[in-house]
Figure 1: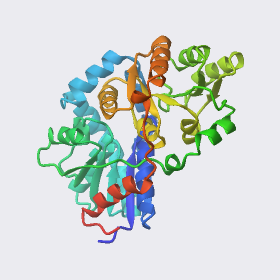
Figure 2 (figure 1 turned 30 degrees about the vertical axis):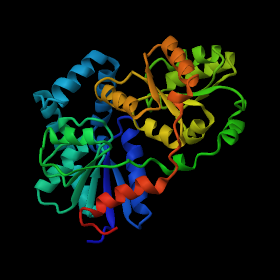
Figure 3 (figure 1 turned 90 degrees about the vertical axis):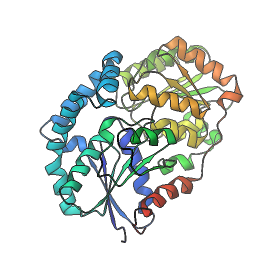
Figure 4 (figure 1 turned 30 degrees about the horizontal axis):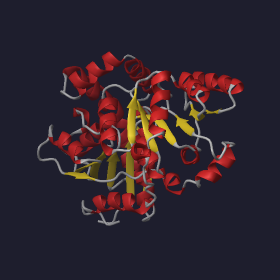
Length: 365
């Protein structure tokens, strides 16, 4: 069957799901496939998306509570997680049906766990599309895995076996997940620094922590700058953090603040090391060729992802305090054997793996 239309089901809890959908969609669009992305959180409707966003943020803000929910409910298929997933699927289902009926995709790719549940439900009701779950977390929880899914794409063999924990017969393939194309063509360091006003001989760190700007980034920016390191500080969609960073930059010229920005490829190129929480930003940093100092600020799946990033090398971890961040950054920069990461600029390789996986389902691309 010729693949003409693909629907991606994402979820706007942070930006990680969206950027994966964008990168995978571009890989297919280069072969003439029409792609569309829908946000499962928005399909909840009637303000439920805002409530879900608020609840998730509150859970993340108390590590012990989120850890308990993640490991006892999501990982262990707990009753509360099942109820919440079922309620979300019921609300999203009629809206996704409308999208599928209108767009008529031959392939649905879920990059968000709740999306995996809804697409599975549609298949059980007789819809004939092929379905893929694309997951960049290092360990699957129960809501990712449904037995009508045709293929699970993961980024490591360990992640693949975590899927088989729930479904031993699952078809799983480990690939290098593509990143957005701008990261494969980031400008040279000298050019990026000149545009930003960072001295060519300065030591420089990019400081960011997801779209929500989680952690003491303002305190860390000040501490790093006072130690002699230039700081590119990204607040994401956190207006309070952005305001604090801009106030600090008035006192310390070595702090260059940003809110939500599309300049991240250039910022990564300009810096010597990326300080960030575990997630898709780590793949982007490795693509540009930058070592990573991991903020241990995301509980649950974030702790699992952090350990996987450390295993990949070119990364270290720190506590979520300004002192720990500063000491870790300085130590990491001082040891090239730990911080050196060769850039992965071959965009076509990761994209080709994703396309080949799609073709493996019998879809001609």
